[in-house]
Amino acid sequence: MFRKSFILVLPCLLIFLSFADKALGMPVSEGEVDLFFYGQKVNEIRLIQEIKNKMPHFQPERFELKQVILFAKSEHGRGSAHLLVNGDMSFDKNIPGDVRYFTPRFDNDMKTYYRIVFFNESHSSGTPWQVLLKGNVKVYQVKVILKRGGEAPVPQSAIRGNCRLKQSGNFFKPDAKVTCDIYGTGAVSYEIIRNDDRRRPSVVWAERLNPRLNEQRIETNEVDDISGPKIVFEVFVLDMRGRRILIDTMNGTLQF
Image 1 (tube, rainbow, N blue to C red):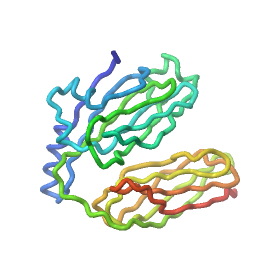
Image 2: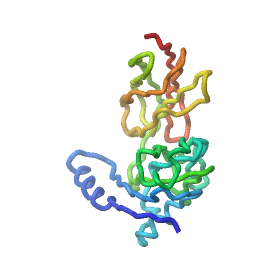
Image 3: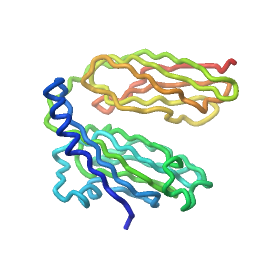
């Protein structure tokens, strides 16, 4: 049995957002469920079962699974994970790590874990909900983002956008910031991928979008670890139909 604790903030948060719905016209009620494993080695996490272990009357059919945030590390940085929802599997995501921080001494040190974000791109919340992991992986925490069902459908429109790349820092510690304006309803999330000839493509930033908004802006924090004579960033938006849309490609050259 895994050693874990459970913090449920969903009821209070839903009460608050229910009030916000009426006061501000917000159509969404969301909540978070936090599951803690404190450095246990895990190969599979059955999210519904984990929630029901602590909340026997939880009814997953009354909620939509929006997002899963995994805090994990792998022994040699070669672990991976993906989210499985109703038979639909997400893209495989790397779990970084360092063997120096894989000993029991660092099991409860949150700073040694990496944040991996999964969006439910299947647009279905049918069971099962699972996080599947490969390699020698330790998990500190899993955050499950839920939304109550029963909302009016969101119309899907053509999605487009334009992006800007701002480079800063210095030769020894360069960094970059990406800003994008996204137009069109139905955009559920975005990913910014570094893709150049010096390394394999990797996700450097990913967050949710509001599919109900016709116009929204992406502004990342600085993305470090961009050493090399040439950097290429690709911005993808995922829509409600599961399509992965290339919004813009940005090229930069480090000149300091």
